[in-house]
Each structure stands twice: as structure tokens, then as C-alpha cells.
Image (tube, rainbow, N blue to C red):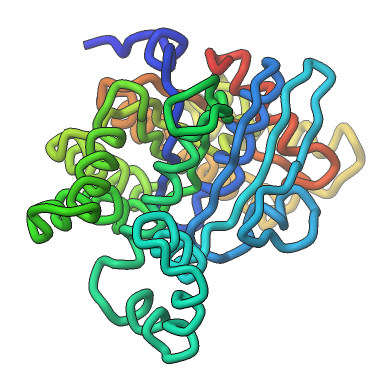
Length: 337
């Protein structure tokens, strides 16, 4: 079944959750997605929850704290802001919002209760982190929640990796089942509804390597079964083949003839064409051909997931020198905007 167009899938989405196996460039892709949306004149909040300061490193700014910081002011009028959600601060904010503890919250922190709740109690940390994201998505400019315009046109969440994202997104459903009434139950249900609504999608970042592709397939199956909406599979760090298709084909079909051609080409430019040199070049070409064939096969597996597929190029200089902007342009050209 052909995947639907990405632009149609993203229509009306306000929360973009970005996940992926560790090392695939998840934070870079989340940053590029946030920038691509901001370049369309939108006010976008980019949120991280793993306390790795990946956003600040990507944009070359000081470490983010618990207050939103503007990262980019785009000529279109759009803005990209960054926030690093920290569980302890989120808990104190929660206690003040629902229980009006005020200075009593500070006393709990001094007693060690806050540290216990955010590091020891199972699931509490993820509840607090998702709760802060929920607050950002629903925040409005009016005096009360729901009054006025949305404060953020879109929120992009740099979420935990694929091995943990299902538990992270589903924790509030478990909490709602445990706390059957009261503000905790009500907020947990509200967060779950938001994460499973049409305005929230999960995008999975992968590389054309066996383990990331397998984890991507597993994550897609898990998240779909749990009722979370799926957006795009982003294939990151795609490299153009070094050899043309015709030459790769000759490696398998006419290796003797290709060897003679390599010798002749080397001699034509004044390079010694000994057995070691020619053999080494052909061996490297064969390895490259095998890599291209594997990537082609893995690309087919990714497309077989039935989701829109976005491909992003490998950046020779990483995210330096405007690399995130290059990726943002690629995302826009492929339907983000």
C-alpha cells in the first residue's frame, strides 16, 4: 500500500514527537523539523526531555534551562524557541498549579521528597515530563487555558529513543488507572487523549543500517498497537553512491574486463598499476557495491512500513556552518511546511 503524501499527514498536527535508535541523529532531525516549521512563519517550541543539552549544542547557544529561550528569529516572522524540561522543576510547577503549595514545595525539595519522586518512584519522571509538554501544546494567550490563541503553533519533542518511547508516551494511561479520581487522574487522562489525538504524531528517525531499521519497524508496530498516531520515517545521513550503477553492475558481471579497464585508466594518468593497487581498488569497489545493495534492500523495508518516507543527506561538516538549515530545507521540499 502506498504511503499517503506527507503534507496531508501533517495537516493540523501541533505536536511532533521525534524518536529513533540512539546514534541515528534524532536530536538533529528534531531541530531541523522545528526550524522547517518556523521558516513557514510559525511560532515553534523545540523541547528536549533527556537533559543532554542536545538542542543547545546543535544551535550553538548556552545550555538551556527551565525557561523558554528563542533560538531563531526567521525573516518570515516565524520563531523557534528551545526548552529543556527537567523533572524536578516540573514537579514543583505541578504542585503549585494543582495544590497551591507555594513555599511548601521548596520545603519538600529541601527534605529530599522531590528528588525521591523524580528519581526513585517508577514512572513519575515521565509523567512530569509529558505533563510539561501537554501544558506547552495547550497553552493559550488568554487568562485561562483554552482562551485566546495558541501560544505555540507547533511543539516539536525530542523524545526518548525507540526502545523507551512507547513506555514514555503510555505512562499517563497507567497513572490514570492507578489514580481513579482527583487532579492526577484528570491530568493523566487529558495527556493521554492529547497524545492519541489527530493533532499529535510520532516520527521515527533511522539510518539505512540493519539494527536501526529493525528498531524502527519494532517501534512502528508498538506505537501503532498502542494507539499513537504515526507520521514519517526519516531516513537520515543518506550518502550518494560513489560509483555509477553501470560500474557496480560490471563488478558482478565482468570482473576481468573491469580489472583491465582499471589498469589502463591508471596507466593513462601515470599511476603504477600493480596487482596490489588494482586488487585493492577492486576490493574497495566490491565492498561499496555490497553496501549500496544492502542500503537498497533496507530502503525497501522502510518503505514497506507504509508511512511517508523522508530522506536527509549526510552532512560532511555535521551541523556546523548551517547544516541544520540545509536539513530544514530538505524537509520543506519533501512536504514539511
